[in-house]
Length: 65
Image 1: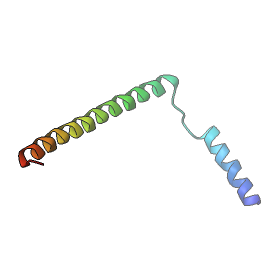
Image 2: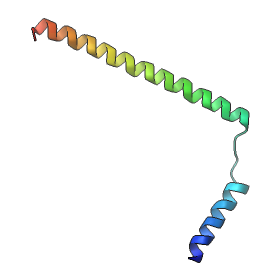
Image 3: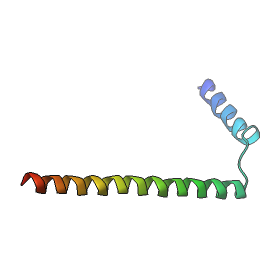
Image 4: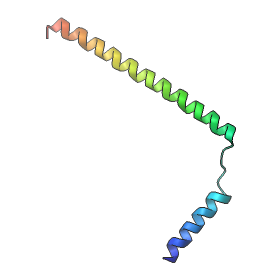
């Protein structure tokens, strides 16, 4: 059990003293970057889905199904 307690203490010490936490401004900037990337990815996937649906619908109409 002492190994587990030692692990927890060392992990806490590392998080408090060795980790470089971002400032509030850096956190806001990276959040905006992630949201913009998410919006772009969503738009691309939506566009691909819409285009494939239109192409398949046209193909099915041509083939008479």
